[in-house]
Length: 519
Image (cartoon, rainbow, N blue to C red; front, side):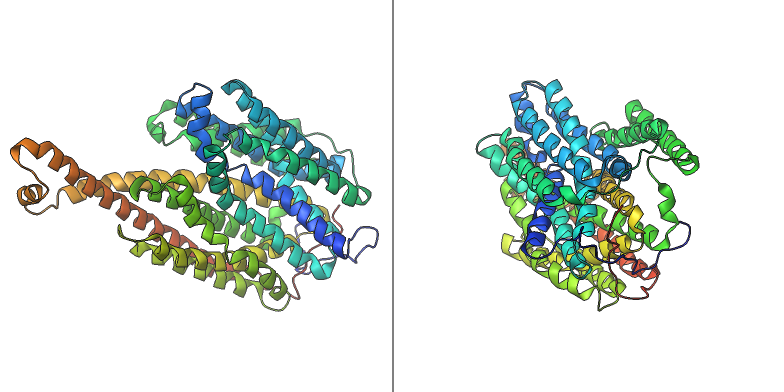
């Protein structure tokens, strides 16, 4: 395992396993839909939190547990999928996870109190976690070699599109039939995915082995991931490390993480095989995924916040702006997938990231008077760069591991994607708020001839309070705009560095193809 797998590692197409013709398209659709459903639930509830809190008669900060509970459970389960697939079979895990996801989604919608909702969301997260890596693993197992890059490209686009669609769909449902339907819509989708997955893939089950259960490794994983996720979700509300609660969570997460690493690297049967990171291509691709997906997720969180808090947009219209990220992506992804076997994937990734970085840098020039129409072109350009990076990255990372490591690799990649999104969201939103406060102080001290400014704002003695409030609102608005531009600048620098860093990946010795056959 210490030696690097060839970049074109593959096995011959097995007629008993691969699917061809129209049924391959159906299979890709079913697996992509399962992945879309799981990723969608990471963001679809976000805009419904105030409605959920009001309906269940709890404070808004308590309502956020509907988000945190799902994120923690999902983050714990994602890296375990390699062990689950080995123990029970990838198809069985996917089918039961989909059915469980539908069942607990229904219970979420039926919840009459916060406790019931949190328990249902935890169980929903446990079922949602395996859907992402298992759908990816099975996709690479049943697709013929000549189609696997295309299939993976389409699957990857669901991972990108779901976080964008979540707030729009969640806002529309919440304002319409009500927040429970944000959960109820999962039920028929889960049933369809489970039914067709079993019918299409049941006879193509992966081999199983009764490996010992690493209870200590699982406990340490749950401990550090749970503490870290709760810390990230609640840090800003509690002023981060000025809160003993947040400090305690950080200590628990740090100690738990170190203990988890030591245990998993020395245990004979680890529940998460971290030795896969000895593979240079997989390790570098994982780092690139962490920074880029974190930046991407931070952007789709930051833009709606800025539009709603500073530009007067509703949640739905802010979601429409972000949605244009995916307009070109759906069409570009298949083209990029075909180019992977003909062009150095590092060049595609670097070009795609350069487009994303340039688009993010362009946003640094946004001002208060920017219109909806003016924001759309950079959003569309952003969508052009995303598949040019993410599709080759998934191909390079998964083609560099052996077929027996596919499920483990898929689980770890998806785990890093989820955690990078949580990290980036916490860091960027907190930094954005702090930057706005600093900018407000700086701008307030630089107002020339404040008396004349107040007079122009109607600051007669009897209306001085109103004029001061108008002036403060103007300063605050500009402070938030500057903070937004500063965050875009930082994200552009990060993306530019990764665009150069992808060339550290070893050059593929041949066409990049996925390891098929699975385990």
